[in-house]
Length: 412
Image (cartoon, rainbow, N blue to C red):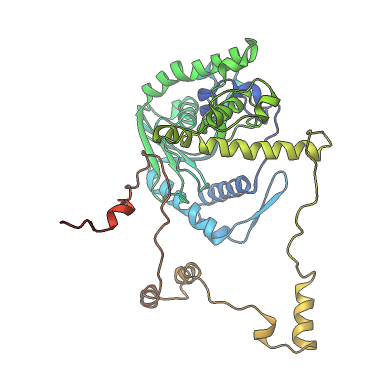
């Protein structure tokens, strides 16, 4: 019997199920819309696979086009190859001369979750077998939030599947879980853990998640298992229709939960302004913004499908920018027929520091020349913005405006 195209208990979505077991049911049957960013990630993973399998550099595939279902064709650029090479170099260094490297491997962790074998599997980007240690590497091409390897459910399941599949290759005592995310940071996130700790996690937390999801699906009251939050809601395909998220947004906005659509429309915002209330609301801003985007997307999807959304309709948007139908024909007409000068026919501008650095990397600009060019580059400081207290960056020292004025009090 062939393996299903999708894993019911995918490793990438398991943390979401741990945090919100009810999401497992709400997302059933919901379409998984692929974005251009996800397509770029798929293409970058393919370059990683090719580079490791054919023992070459990622740059060997620059200029190649990769078809990504359902409707994207991604070109491998020099920038993509540079980021992929970071992971390639790590894997080769970690493997060393005597290690065994397995690339793009299907792993099955079903027995640790207590579910059928066809229901729980995933694909590990790279597995390294090193005597008593097994290393599982996951490459992420995203440039959003940094993903940590420590206590990561996705990586833990991949490691368990790798241990189960390659137990005959060694007596593995420790597992090293690695997330390479070079567009966020060049150094990978690593977590070393005893194999026994992974098995204990599976026997307790992971298996409990499966039980909660099944209870939510067949227990008759899924809302008891819905738990809105930034992590679990971010990629949830049911966020636009989730009743718990809707109530959480309403309570954050108005400090009460509406019982009907009419009550939701009549909500008045809370007027609390103390620091504790602002802090509590700020904790949920990202989640609420994602919810707003999901609502817009769901409304557009329904209207474009011919369904009704009371009070709304689809209209033509702003027309796009004007473009030449045939650039070569226009160029020939402007230059040869109208005899326009280069300055009249073309928009010319100086290359950016980033483009100049690429010329340095390709050898067009030498090291000494680049040193001189760097003296001509300036970079503004980052604009201050609000971040959670857990952010590793140091807090800015803010001086209240009133403190910048001297004491002008006159002494009698």
